[in-house]
Length: 420
Image (cartoon, rainbow, N blue to C red; front, side, top):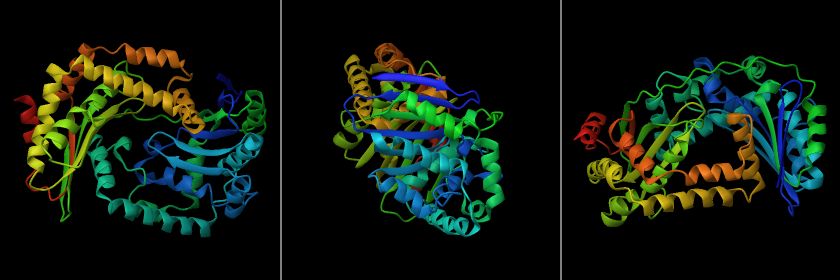
């Protein structure tokens, strides 16, 4: 593997990694403009703009954008998260210049035609409606809102329908002007790529962009709270969140190992005790998510109305028990799963390009893989038990419940069980 980085004079960053024996490449531009960069009046506009990028440019119609990539057997896509919007493609080696040209075109030359805005508005409203009809999607939006109330980090990525209904061309253009500068962009490429060629292409495509001040982002503050909505569904959906480390925190790997041991797989504590031994649910898991300056350890389960009180209580009990008896064998298993997941993921050029962009966004460099593995290996049983005690007793907590949840304990009651 050959990892190389470069920065253009205007601040545009490039990171590539050649993967020998591959005939294809994944290339994309990650823009540090996501949901947390929006004002309340803009909530949902980063995602709306992602949709509009594919609806036509000064050089290509929407159909021509799709045909340009699919004519050579590739694919192109995009996504919006709370911290970035990504535009990426997977193509054969000889078509990398074409893919970068198309991505640059949709980023720099969108026409944002009124008729296309109206069409895509309808599509996004349908997407919002679909999410609201999917309990195990909507509950995580509620959980985020309760964890980070009245701040950008707590708002939904799709935005509320009433905001999306009002966005116009000027709103989209203004967001581009505020957040789509060269210093906010990272071009990442992995697979059958030539670094020097990509730097040259980037200079031609993005080198003319004027520098732009980076927008300040308010620091996220995990507050915690509860939202529940009773509805006649087959299952009760139950989710908890606890304040955890962000990407730049030294404890990030401890948090991820803890979440894996607690609820990351079939051998995890929550799965074994609550599903296998008690039969209280079909689905239960824990995961540690992270952002630049904050993080959330999340637990989710779906169960029946009558079993929800027992499930909620046992979840708190298992968290408390982990603080005193999480074993070296469990920690070793979680470490192995984490390292295997990382290494297996890097066999995909798309995953590798994603990782390159994320690490450059966080650190402005790509730490060697050996460094990351060493940090994972350095987490001790004592570290995890100490972190588990923090999660069980002191970490701020949020909850979201949806469905037949009237009998579920309140957040206050769960807090009291933590303290007992």
